[in-house]
Image (cartoon, rainbow, N blue to C red; front, top):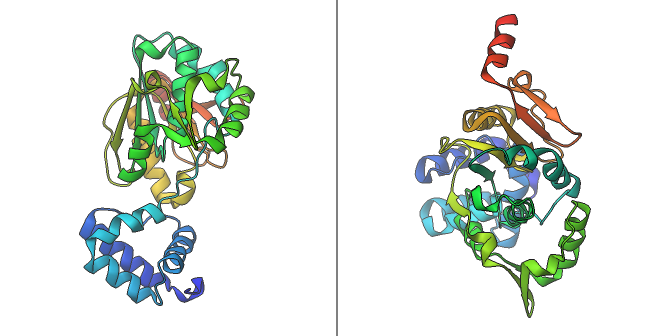
Length: 285
């Protein structure tokens, strides 16, 4: 194992720049402390005896890149994670979205998909599934494939059921999936309105206009400049009066967008203001 302190900042930055130039995966604006921990973890698991050995493997063996991306991108998620957030969606957001003829929701950084299935259940129970499209994106194609399959460990269902009830769910949660030995396969009707695609928040542009964007526990791994860039991307992608949902430790409060959004409820959910309100605020600054 390499001691984290022995991975020099300039070596790490040089490697990340090379990866961006060679493969188009840009991690140069990720939080340095976080990415250094994960690079060290890769060295430990894959038994590299030096940072130079890891660099050689990445530069000379392109097939190893996917393995690197999987470890660098954090894929910790669960269904109805932070149930109070989903309860706020049920009570404050979905009723307003219900007035739209078509609802486009973007789940950015969807990881293995547990949250997009949670959103599908919310839309179904609100009677909005027929006019809802759920766009689930992630930088990592292998986790997207798992998300597309909708198969999760059966051992997680007790926790997910508890989260669902705390979020305001009143149905029998087990009716949404079929248990098969160690796994639970979620019903196909939940997948009908899901669209999965790779998308890199660092380098890719907006690809549609949405009424709700959810990106939770992703921005905490980005530095401030990259967070600002992603907030701009979300702002460009949100309709006026659209909603933005973030993770419990994330906020737009200190960004330039703060004055153009107002927080609803006590959860990390903001609503974008009308264009005329934005112009008025800009005029008075």
